[in-house]
Image 1 (cartoon, rainbow, N blue to C red):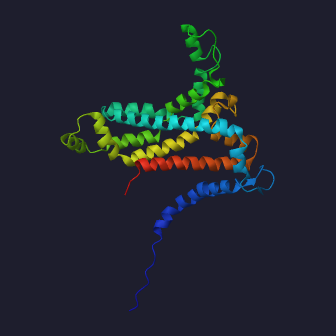
Image 2 (cartoon, rainbow, N blue to C red):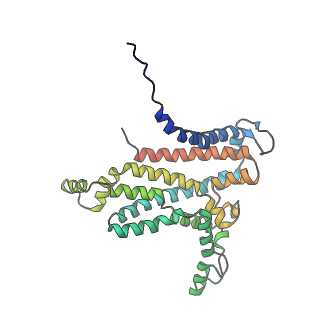
Image 3 (cartoon, rainbow, N blue to C red):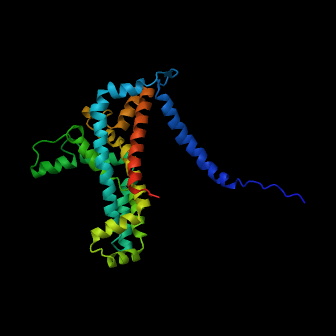
Length: 298
């Protein structure tokens, strides 16, 4: 009797096929196309012309706005909103874990709901609050209290625009990262805490440092990566608030806005692609830092 040859089971690939197709179509191909276009001059009309590293050289050595305004703004925004939103997410998740289930559900929904609102719709609400005339809620309140003698152009002032952007972004930053942390805290075995107190833990701070955070590293890593990505994608809020791209005196201009300025306003697609590649590298580096902090060491 001849044995029949073993047939390979391709059923797993059938289930993976939709993901592979969509991931390749919407992630791999666009990223590869952006990298290739970054080495060309492309105005969206004529055929791309290969110019080597000229876009990158120009970005670093000739684009004064990028080096003096955009890059410092982006790093300032990222270093405040990223860690700030991340720490705030963890603190709120830990605090909610201490309250009864029914109240926790309501509070979690209230905290999470701003992140479900579209950035443009959210900007409309804050634009009314920070309106530069007497009808703006903040100006009206301060004028009534006698703090101001005349209205302040909050969203057109280089002094205030970045601060408002940071505040609004932090307000809406409690997204899926916050929910992941809340899930992580709630799923920690309470017996671990009991064992910790037997072994010498004496207060809540030590409990958080030695038990809570080490026990939910996957959720902490996920929250960190989502914070990094969300922070670098939040550039639209400055344009939506100020109503202009570039923002007034580039005070709220981030790398995402600089990319849109060159790509969709000036139609210098090759240069915009180079900016996008630099942004991709920056996000990757910040994500690697998050992985080093919260990834598995094995």
